[in-house]
Length: 323
Image (cartoon, rainbow, N blue to C red; front, side, top):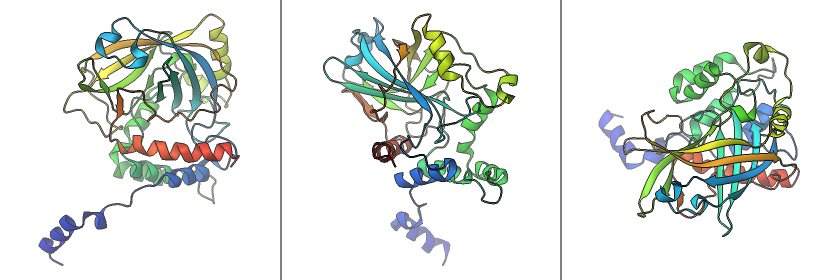
């Protein structure tokens, strides 16, 4: 087959030559192969606990947008702090992402979810590369451990899988859930007061400041301390984060969560997230799907973001039926 014929075939039938698209069930299956089966647990971010508090927009927020949770009224918050991955006994000094899921529920019944990590970028640009990366983490039956050479080879062949790993290597794991920022990672659109959609990413900056574990703490035997440290912190009063909205420009990617927008982008301080106490089982029945959005907020076409809804739904269903 000559090059012209091949080019014509690719142009006429691109789907025949595209990489096979990842499916939600593949992510559920690969998590089980990496972390084992843990019935009744979340398949991702298995280790975590609930918290409650409030969100209140800052006075200038309503000048930007009239979405319900920016009105200035205090909005009840149900949250969940978590470790990444499917291990409900994950070591809390590991160099892995930490998560924060937040549900806002306004007086008029609007619901807004934030599903965030403490890394500013995601682990891959699309579901296929993320699935491929996860598959390299499946333990070798002979050793019981992942093949490091296989992981390195995949990352070398897929540069988009390197940014999050590099961030985790350069930044210490958080000393407390209260001493780390949280990033929405994906791109969303918010209608401003003129009805124009603004491309945004959000992140939450801790008012307690950023503090990581020491080298000695990272190298120490695995221990559980994150829930205890947050409980101790809350005896002194609420722990707070400022919600910042990063305003994207035309050239900033809307679909690649592995790429960070330029640092010089304009940011707006929109509100204050306050966690007042740990929440027992308050979050148990919540599926922190990041595509649950209030009126005036729209998700981008980021395929990783879109994949999260069906994958979360499958995980949620399995958890409710003790699978």
